[in-house]
Length: 144
Image (cartoon, rainbow, N blue to C red):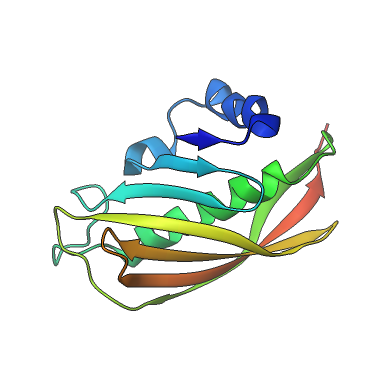
């Protein structure tokens, strides 16, 4: 995994408070962590398929929002701010059967002071487009 050094400690702090979360349940493994691009893989297994034996669209959306949310959070320097998903849309293009792996690649389209917009491509291991989504992230003040 490659993590840009200037954000390494911030990213690594994520796993301390809640080591078990949706990412761990879905088997999401990060491969590139930066403010300009996030990448992770996710297996197509019993945790991520729908009853027809193919990748569940909701699992794809979970991968996309995970990448966008963490990427957005890494771009916020105010420690009194948090990021939350405001809206996400996805187009599912190709099915992936049980036993495969998908790769999510997320990049910012807009990084403002109150919102960020990230686009995520989910692809097969050989680069075929599975899903494409756009996620709007709100930057809010932490409570308490």
